[in-house]
Amino acid sequence: MVYTKNLILVCTGRDTARAARLGLPVLHLCLGVTPAGALQRLQLPTAGAHCLLGLCDPPHDLTACRADRLAADLVFEAQRAGAPGVFADFEHDTPAGRRLLAAFDDALHEADIPFYVPLACGRFLSHAVLTTPTALSGGSLTAYISSLQGIYGAARIAAFLQPVSQDFALPSAAPNGKTLTAVEREGLLARTGSQAFFSRELCAKYFTYTDREGRAHFVLFDDASTLEAKLAQLAGCGVQTVFALFPDAETLLSPS
Image 1 (spheres, rainbow, N blue to C red):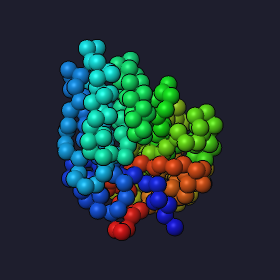
Image 2 (image 1 turned 120 degrees about the horizontal axis):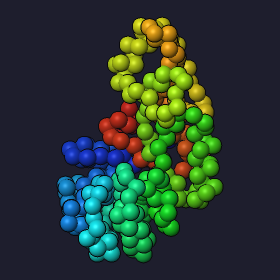
Image 3 (image 1 turned 45 degrees about the horizontal axis):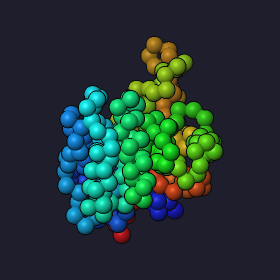
Image 4 (image 1 turned 120 degrees about the vertical axis):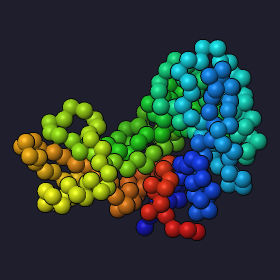
């Protein structure tokens, strides 16, 4: 069983209309902030899809921006589009970004519009739902999600289903390894004769090998089966909302 009940597909461009036909909620990254600090439509939301509105990372220098006015414009745009929520896809934690997010958080909460923010940029907010990636290189996915729910409350934690495919040279002090495509990974498996195993704690597959220089490597990756397992674990933790990139998550779905 694939737990797609609370899945929201994250889309840009032409993929949005295609994803909307699958019958699941869609997040359309269609808004931005200009260097002058004004709300900007990068694309029109897909007609009739009632998409969540996605706001892209703003410029770094927004000292002249009126955060309260921009927040009011964002609420107006969400209400005009009938959007069931807003996602601020902020990638950098900056003072200007924090000022904007705080204004958005208050304004959208007052308008009763759900607001989603990446955990790394939204820890200080009072109302927003905080999204965290599911790609871990250590520990336990269930324990990690449960710890966040204990800090912020279960209703304020959402997940971003982020497939991983990385090669770590051991020992590795870095949280990220070398990214591998599926073709590169399968070729590596074939050349080394390694066997892949499933880690229930990480909810991902892995294998090890030794390169020509004698260095040990650890490869961690997702496929359709591990993404399904992640969705099941998240559902077991009571996570109410899971975002997934489209078309990456298409293997989990069947047209309704």
